[in-house]
Length: 257
Ligand SMILES: Nc1ncnc2c1ncn2[C@@H]1O[C@H](COP(=O)(O)OP(=O)(O)OP(=O)(O)O)[C@@H](O)[C@H]1O
Image (cartoon, rainbow, N blue to C red):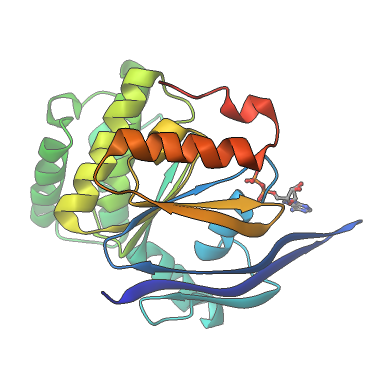
């Protein structure tokens, strides 16, 4: 399988009042359709890595190659287009607009691209049926549960069929049932649409839905674990690496067995 995301020798130095090296020589490849989890103690550099891959921030050195393109080399306008077309984002706090209905939130990326309204309707219908939120589309964000909000956010993130879906703690604000629900939704999209996904999480239970988890410690790649056929065994392997990693015990406060 071809590598569709290549992270090569990535370094990030924050150059503020105090200089801080947040990432050191991070290198890994992701195959088309892979679902990758990124874990590590608080402050280890997970969000920094996600921000470099998502082009929200620039690396100090090293490369990010997405589907053969180097987004950090693109000019401003092309970079904005790259983000809009090739990437989808899911956040911990959903980032939905409260003044819009769920349907309007989901169609937003296509509205901005001026896609034909008949086409938008078809896509919204197909995606919301798949995600089990087609009956609540006229509701607003404050009228639905956290899990339903996150599934709405996922629908919005994939409606334009991005090449790469990036998720930052997508279960961070959810109870255990909704977390499971959201992870099953992400797994289903990954399997059906072969969307390549990268998710930062503190939650070993959420990470056990991935194909592979990479662990970061103090800004360096520490380890990686592949899922075999058994999710429970994988979950235990993730816990084992996390216990070797150490870090703040609060990091494991979200462990759900
Ligand atoms: N803009 C910034 N300027 C200076 N240092 C920063 C900046 N952003 C992050 N850092 C530092 O870089 C390190 C990595 O931060 P990052 O947010 O990537 O960690 P994380 O693994 O995502 O943590 P958490 O799990 O707590 O969200 C931390 O020590 C943090 O204090």
